[in-house]
Amino acid sequence: MPKGKALNGAVIAISGTLSKPRKEVEADIAAAGGKAGSSVTATTTLLVTTDAEYASVTSKVAAAKARGIPCVCESYLRACLAKGSLASTGPHLVTGSRPATAGTKRKAVAPGGRPKAAKAAPAPAKLSATLAPGGRPKAAKAAPAPAKLSATLAPGGRPKAAKAAPAPAKLSATRSFSSSQKVEFMAYSRALDCLILGNHDHHTNLFALDMATLSLRAVKGLGALETPFPGGCIAIGETASDRESIFVSEHRYDHILGAGIQGGGIQWGGCIGAEGELTMTGPMQMCFDGAVDELWVAREQHHPRFVCVLRGSTGKKVGVISPTALWGPGQDSQYFVRHIAGLALSDEEVFVATEHGVKVFSRGQRESAVWPPMPAGEPGTEVGEESKQGYVYRRELKVNKRIDHVAGWNGQLVLCCEDAVRILNSTGKELCKLPQRGAKCAAICGRADGDELAVLVGNGNIHFYK
Image (cartoon, rainbow, N blue to C red; front, side, top):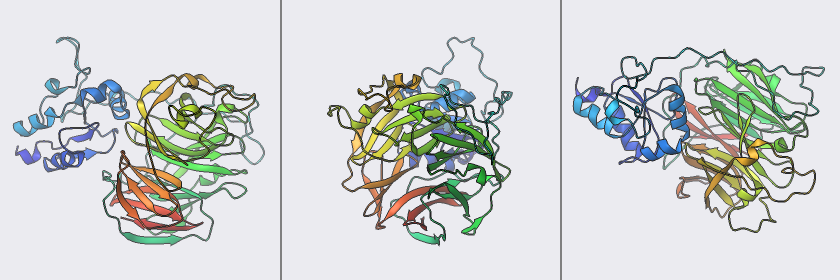
């Protein structure tokens, strides 16, 4: 087999810093007949990573281990090119993933090095929600543990988008859409190829913008996520099984409504949280990493602000960024962040946009969370199990303009600032600037023909860039 086909049939994800820039490694993979994947999914055959990344269990490493996907060093790619075909992964497994002894049995693999599919685990029980007249969930009086969500999610009917490329150094305006309805938040659904738009003017309204035609279209079941009280935000993400989940916050009842996207429609899942539960108050910003089933939620109803991390499928609390951690090390503990403008995730880090800039925390390194002394009845006086599981603070990216929203774009950040839309890398270096004033939020549309950046300006004007 010629070297141009050495990686034929392989779908390879990358985690960590290799000997060459990631874009060059991805280009080498494509030139050798393989496909570079932006995340670890059911189609991924290999994860190229480093010993350090494997030891810290980044989100991609965790997803690969859960699926039994081999985690190999960069040397594996060179071995395949030298051989002219897929090489054995054994000699190239990262430290820690190698068998303990020579006699240890390895997982069976199909041709091409891809692990054979294991039997599917039974789906968890569907949430049994108490409904009020009209079908809305009643607020629970006391729920120490969040309710389970339905696991009935299915892949969308549209083809999967090609691998998302990093944000380009230059973007050009391509098209625009003006809504006759007020728009305050939005998120892209790959399964529907729609931007799900919403507002929370007295209550939460949702509607779908078809990306192919730039016209509103009906989506079955979308109305189930509308609430009679103001909401705050929306999050959509693809799970490790290549299915999509959608979450909408209901501010009044401290609920997050969850659903799956199936057969071109929305299938109701259930509620996370209960009215008055202090660690669940006022969900106002969210983002979802379906590969590891993490829903990150900024809580803003009361002072001080903090970030709660939940399992999207069950609502179980797994971590927290406390008010003290958000304010930063060495700061006066009597002061706290006043506003959280948004959340964004990379494989290794979480970015929290505040009025002071963007706070960066490790997703893999954990520490005990420190909560400040709080008056009786304030959030933080009755925290759950996640109070013990904080995240290590790494750095702050200073931005000299007010930030209204942040979105993640393959490890880079799209900041909607008061004077422009800025694209930064993870160290804070500005890569691109769009002179668009008044941007309220942004969404990355990972479409089959390439990524498209959607920017909401004012109360209903959406501009698209490529």
